[in-house]
Length: 197
Image (cartoon, rainbow, N blue to C red; front, side):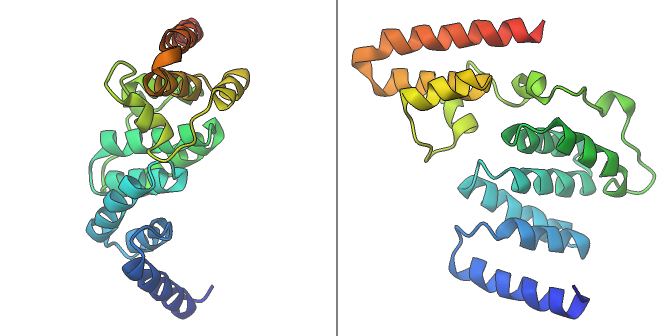
């Protein structure tokens, strides 16, 4: 896309975002601001956007890149891990990790201890404390459908953190079956701890 057309396209997206603050176009606009070296603007857009769309993986990845470009490497890596966890893609994380040096302030390189292993899910406890109150919302978001069937699907697909969050939320929302759902959540916690070994 020619730069003139790209600028026009981004301006149209900006207008949409101006009239609809819940628009998911914020990530695309922020990415464009990063490319124009307007990292501060990008960070403002992304901070607001991920509050509205906490389960938008691309937004977390772009937010991470903006934070890294702004010098907040640890926070940036945390956002990237969260975004790639949401799509369950180690390859995506590794791809962006290979590009990070382009986003770091000049003269800095990503230290080898900042690189992650191929298992993103093992690092989730660094991002989300599973014992904190309402940790479920950090994993599932605020407007996620809650059902026992969906929790069982997550469990069958080895999406253990989502299954744990779902069973925990079900326990809170269903006092008559609280004991049952807490038991299911405890079973999932055991599976998570076994997978960490």
